Amino acid sequence: MANIKAFKAFRPKAGLEEKIAARPYDVLNSAEARIEAAGNVYSFLRINKPEIDLPEDIDLYSAAVYNKGKENLDAFMANGWLVQDDAPKLYIYEQTMGKHSQKGLVAASSIDDYFNDVIKKHEYTRPQKENDRIEHMATLSAHIGPVFLTYKPVKELDNIINSWCEKHEAVYDFVSVDGIGHRVWVIDDKTTISTITGI
Image 1 (tube, one colour):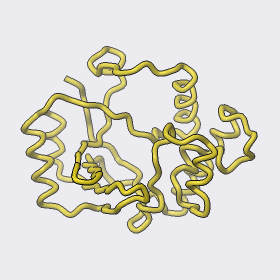
Image 2 (image 1 turned 30 degrees about the horizontal axis):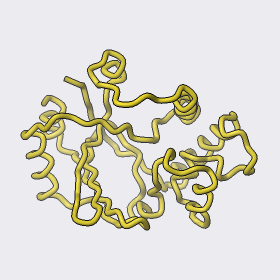
Image 3 (image 1 turned 90 degrees about the vertical axis):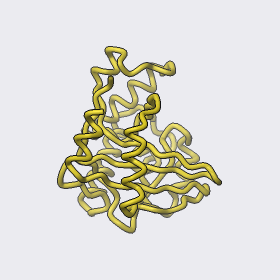
Image 4 (image 1 turned 135 degrees about the horizontal axis):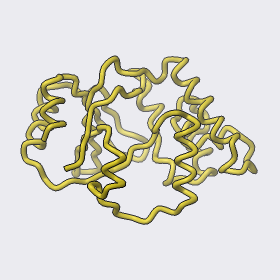
């Protein structure tokens, strides 16, 4: 079984979540990202596609791009737009499109589980893209994009997640410009965290 644990996330300051939220870096090219972030200093695209704040002819894999990402991330934190939780927590993230909703658990996972095939690879990733993300993480000293993992149904876990969502208010709840609903809950109870990470 894969190992997961709680972590101290940096999250958008309340009220800025809709402005900071952005689509994943790999679904937009640089030109599209420039358009999408135009006029929005809070856009997370300034961190995960930092070339949008540099000349259009910039080499996307240059140190200048990674350094700009770090500069922007540092500014987001210094300005209080991203605030770190004071203790390790787990998070529930729900997306809704039309009548379909799906929830996921946001947690830290073990890189050793990936290399030891406890976490099964589901696609081939081009080395250039892998190296780009590695350099991005190393320069920023942060992992800023989620890695989506799936798991076989675990009824006990489903019950915990659904119960938590029924009993607690979402800390974020908004619909993005593409019509997708986003809700996030923070699991801050140590017993619940221990139960989940021990399943």
